Length: 358
Image (cartoon, rainbow, N blue to C red):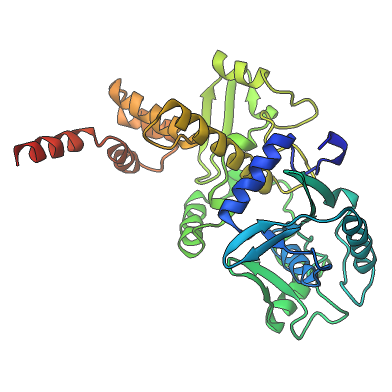
C-alpha cells in the first residue's frame, strides 16, 4: 500500500497496518469500530453505523469482514465491488432521503490491502455540535437517529434527539461558548478532581480518563530548559528540568510543522484522542512482542517504564514526597499504595519459605 492510498488518519506503513488489523480481529468490534460483510452487496446498515459514529465519537467502518458464530473472517471485496460501493456511498451521502449530513471526503473512504485481500475503510468523523443530530431519512425523530455504545448502534429516543437539536442552536449555545481571558488558573482544581472521580465511577472507560500527558506536550511548553504542563488527570501543574536524554528522543523524530513535541498527534483535523489510542495500541503491541523475544515474565507495556522508575527511585531511598510529586499523585498516601503494589518481592520470598517448610 503506497503513501498516496494510505488513509490519512492511519499514519503507519503497510506492515503496521496488517498488524493493526490483526489486533482488531483478535479484539473483535469495539465502540469505534464496526466490521460488515459486503461480499453479497452493499449493506444498508452502514448508514445506521454512520449516524451512530457521527453522533458519538466517530469511528471506522470496515467492509469485507464477516462475523460468524462470534468469530471474524476476512472475505475481502472484488475490484468491481470497490468501485460500485464508492459510487453508492457518494450518491447516498448526497441524498437527503438517505442521510441528512455528508461528513465524508475522499480521504475518509480508502481501499486497503490486507494480506492480499481488498477491504474498504470508511472513517466517520464526529459531527460538530451544530451538525448533530445526524439522522436517516428526512425525519430525525421516530428512531431515525442513532448513537453508539458498547453494544453497538442503538436508536436514540426522541428526548435525546431533541436535546441534540437544542444543543445545535448556535445563537443560544448551552456550554460551547468560549470564555475569553480565562485560563486553567481560574478553574477550581478541587471541583475538577471531584468531577473526574464522578466521571470515573460512572464511565470508567471514558477516553478523558486515559489521555496520556506525553502525547499532548507542546513545543511551547518547553522554555529555557524547563518543561511545564498540567496533568490531564488531575490538573496539577508540573515543572520538569529538560535533560539531554529527553532532547535526544525528540531529535529522532520529524515534527516540523506540528505544535507537538512528539509525533503522536499528527493530523490536526482528526480527533487527538483517537490518534493517541491508535498509537498507544500499536506501541504496546510491539512492546509485547519485544518482551516475548526477551523472555520477560511479564508483558512489556508503556506502563512498565513508569513502574520501573518508581521502583528504582524507592530502591535509591529517594523520599516518598519526591516520588509522589514526580508521579503526579494527589497525595503521598496514593504513592505509598502504588509502591506497595509494585514491590511484592518480600511477600513472595515469605510465601516460598513457608511452602518449603510444609
